[in-house]
Length: 377
View 1 (cartoon, one colour):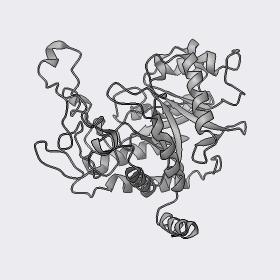
View 2 (tube, one colour; view 1 turned 30 degrees about the horizontal axis):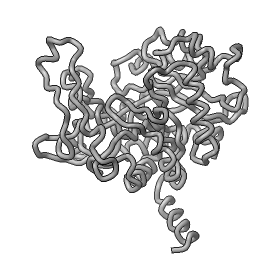
View 3 (cartoon, rainbow, N blue to C red; view 1 turned 90 degrees about the vertical axis):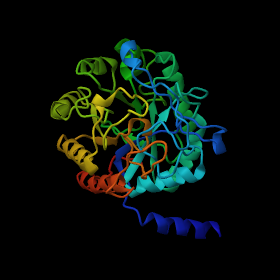
View 4 (cartoon, rainbow, N blue to C red; view 1 turned 120 degrees about the horizontal axis):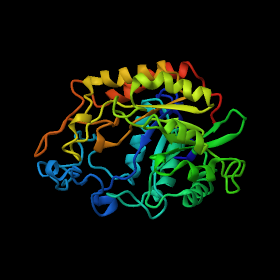
């Protein structure tokens, strides 16, 4: 097939999807591995984590899961115990994101040669992810994780790395600020682990090492967990806040009744306001003792209620927790019924794409209110 015939075929396929809403973001994880692509299972074999109280811990199992039948999750993916490096998986994920009308995937990011406690380095997956995302007109933003030893010095190095390596890629997400500048938007997970003084060195115009008004300037979004973080976020010089957690009531930021006052706080202080919503929460596959944070999906009602509450609070963006955080049961990715040694939860009586379809419905409502005027096409 010629290149032009292939691109015509792709354009025809893309027309079947709803338009991407670039104000709708989804947290995306690339830490999964399997023997075919990675030589072993990664993350699907997640250990069951011990409770911090030794007495409680003794009452629960602490073994590793044994994929592919037994995985570290309460649901089972339609695509099986996949590898995040598998090009056909990335292709399927882009199709699912477009089915849901999601315009931006927010990739969990660790610096080169670093990974989370249960995983391997994943930065080398990003180039392929961006290539396939671009093909599907999906943008990629970065979610900087609390990698070991994170401080203001190596944060600067890592922001420079991200912008130098990926900043010119057409899939790299940029947003126009109130001053008219088109800048990358970067989420910082557990930003509170560094104090305001450390962040200020990077983010305040007054500091000699500041990245403001340099080629490495960006829109930095802090995680707001507790109410006291409001003050810290302002002092630090952040540009906006997000709430991440899909469990209503788990934290100040994720409690829906606080969203109107959070909106007022962001408006008063000229901060970008990003609310996070999810379809439910269950992580007892990896934290068997943590049932009090479980939020039942109620066949999609929990998700719809959360999306409705988010829209009423008029955020600048909505972020979805998550596309594929299977360990915490927050995924909207397609899941299938599965029984065996382990009996998994599923989306029945609905079909595997139910959460993509709910997302698409609300994307149209949220999109209708916004337009895409400040997004780099």
